Image 1 (cartoon, rainbow, N blue to C red):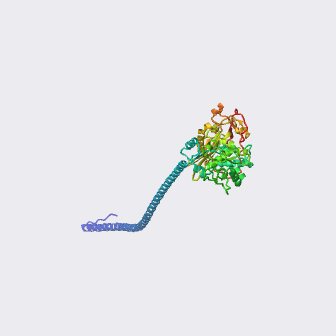
Image 2: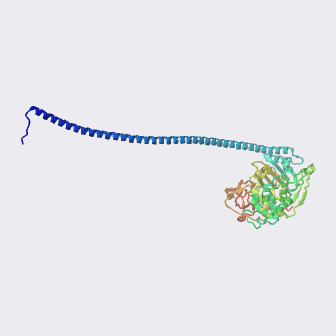
Length: 527
């Protein structure tokens, strides 16, 4: 069909207007649709934004609430931490205060102890000085009438700076040559310490507790025999002997030997001593507990042992006649056999030759004695009771010393100086007591010296090595040191018969005595 197009302008204009309106209407509609869509999109965006805002606000609100809670918790925690910190600071301050107090208390206690130690030391030094001062003052008051001035000077020089006393007496007559510090030697007593073992030994021998042949103890095994028990001051040995004797029997023999009673010296105010009545402790047989003796009584005791049991009455010569023609006074003779008394002599010789006194005395002078070390009257006491020469004893020398460092070996050294001063008067015979009177036939042993320490009696101190008793190897090789060895008593079993003392040490030395094969045997003097 052929398209018709109006020819008149008016119609054409109208149609154009209508087309424009239609186009405009469509555009408006489209625009309206677009606007509506845009508005909807905007609305959605707004809604979404609002929702997001609400959500954000909700979240912010939650965050705010959470932050508030967190802040509250943080604040509470901070408050708690602050309190804890304050408490910790207070606790730390308290700890420091207590630590300072503890340190101050420690320092104060240390200073108190140091002061107490200084005061104790000062008291001790004052006591030591007091002992020496008392000794000097007593010596100045000594009545020296009738004494031998040379022997007194020798005894005073030997005592030197020691606080103590020295008694020198003729062992066969009882004539007193000198008594240095007469107050301590005559008018007051002291614990006898290990010198009491001489009494225990004599009692054990006479009662048959100790064998006179080999020195063993009846029904008891010991590490030493009698000779070495005396030489080395074996506490356990004499406690076992005492356990077989009993306290009453021990006291009986002590009285028989002159203890617990005045000696009869011609000086007023002599102290009688003390005996351990009622004491059954084993230490009375080894340490002399509850005994008190005077140095003069010990001089009489060792004189009795050396002269076979004659109980001499010591006398100080008071005039020229008594000095030149001294008359001995004898109270009585011991009622038991003299060989039971003299049987302790080999041990006394051993003490001087290789035992507790060997460093202080010259054994070649024939010294025989017994040391003692213990605490008595608030101080250490050293004792040495001895005679020389042992074959025919001329002098009895007894020394006691008191002081912190005093022991029996130092008392023996004082006696050794006295004997050296008396050397020209100590004439030895050619008798050998160990070989004749006691019939000990040792065999000569060649070999290395025995090593080991021996106890220093009650003080538990090492006194001497056994090697010193034998001499050096060179001396043995050269034949300059004739040493004899006797088989020792079998070691003791595990049965404890008496209490163990602090000075007992596990040492097993052999029994040794010196022997010169060139010396001829002689019968002992029976005077």
